[in-house]
Length: 520
Image 1 (cartoon, helix red, strand yellow):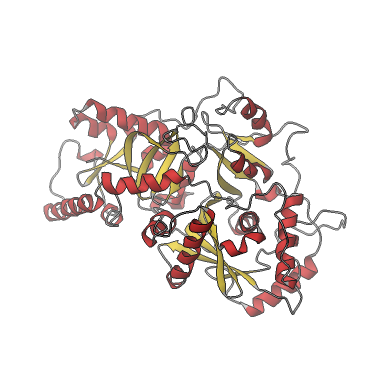
Image 2 (image 1 turned 90 degrees about the vertical axis):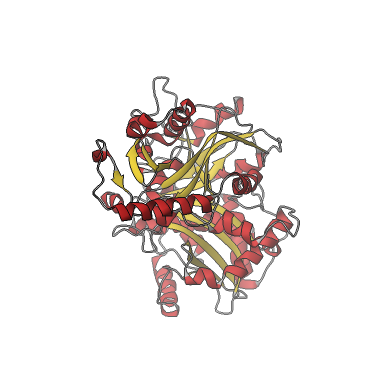
């Protein structure tokens, strides 16, 4: 991962204390509690480390639930796609889609135990309130103008001004560009191996079925139709290529790819395509389809979430699902599409019917949100899109071997509507105290007894990534980057130290040394 070192640093603005807002799950008016920060910009490496410590983004606002105090504890959940096998209900959803595409059949009723709502719809209602509140609390434009003046002044001074602590100060070269957006201002990876009889055996390869000839014919046909491939274009109905060597046994269950790649007749009633477009910075494809995508979002919010017509505005859509702090990054051993924030658009017969908002990070595909045309609710698009994103993760893994997880946001055991995420097995939950991953099967008994649980059963275990040297934390203050140890010598406000130390404890040592904490 040495390539990440050449990137410009993340810049964040931490909000001291905790936010209290209405819970989108249990509807408690002030029961949801979290810590938060505004990310002016962020590298994918830093965001990967943050979500591995329980953070999550909503637009450019990055928040971490106060797990032992919030009304509905939200545990980060990830699926292991390389070992994933679709359940019976998952197969029903895929077959339902195939029947619709092939013959136009519309199934009556929903699949059992599978919600029709958005699979990744865990961005709580409070997110909108939080982001809107930041518009009032902070003024990034003023901050940005002040910083630009500072940089211009520094450029005029040149490099002749040196002080006793100059060896510890680093002139910032890229910070100015990240703060002029007009927005509001103000991993420890420990893999727990399941005990015999509990969870999947990770030492064995996943079961596959040999249908390579048919799949190869299908791929060749699609390549002829669409030689440009999938970078920012089409993932047609047979999107994922072969992932593993074929097996000779014929009694193996169908893989996820087998089910998605099921052949359609030449005279199929419908055509489904999945297009991957970069949303930040917006690509030409994203810009060209922005209005169509927004209209789907607006209908989704009004019909599914009962929003009044004036609530799902273009501004809200942009802040919530299009703006992202993640910088577009590319690596020679990374996926061809690069890392960062994307929209996966589902096109049916030439029109958008669903959009999955995703982040592609060094170790995972992280699902942010899904919205869809309510007229197609009968297709269980929440479940279908999750299965496609799992297959997409497996596809990216072929080029980027480290990218092997699918993050589904938060698992909320106390909310029946959100428990279904645990049905994508094998999956793990993040321990909220030691930040190690524990197979969900081992966590469920504890969650039945208590909303808040420490999943790591070792009483001696601690957070190995905790901040042990806060003086090494990087601060951006008055046109310069400096260690907190230098910065605090000039600060007299006692609350300043408490705020910085709280931030350091939440982001961990590694991120505190890489990210720049803006202080004014």
